[in-house]
Image (cartoon, rainbow, N blue to C red; front, side, top):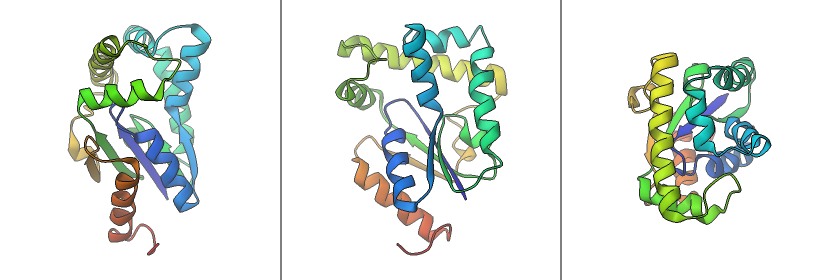
Length: 181
């Protein structure tokens, strides 16, 4: 079984994906961590890398190669925006979050790869969403907002991590993907 969790920045996908993997005894894999590592190594913000990737497909090729390798594995929770696309046999989950709540969460996390100023962070998250939407459409003809791509779409704006995790576990049990927990 492979579960792919996609979603907007700040939607809680990484935090919940880690907890879901732990609860199910699966391996957690994060493509976003590769991007954050690239950000730290190149001293570029995630926004700068995203906008650069619009002109330089080698960045996506690097990330995509990791996703393609995972499609033959099993027992994974994959945290990746395009996980649903590169691993079609997965159970595909997408997290939506309003932009203000996303910025609040990312600001609270105090990541080294993000702006410290809340107004600037809010603007950068908005620009990142736009950049990713353009990139994914131009490179793959995929829209993250086409919710038909997913088995479950969750708006996490008003939910905490435990509530989202409980909802996911209930969904997986109801679908027969996992046994009663």
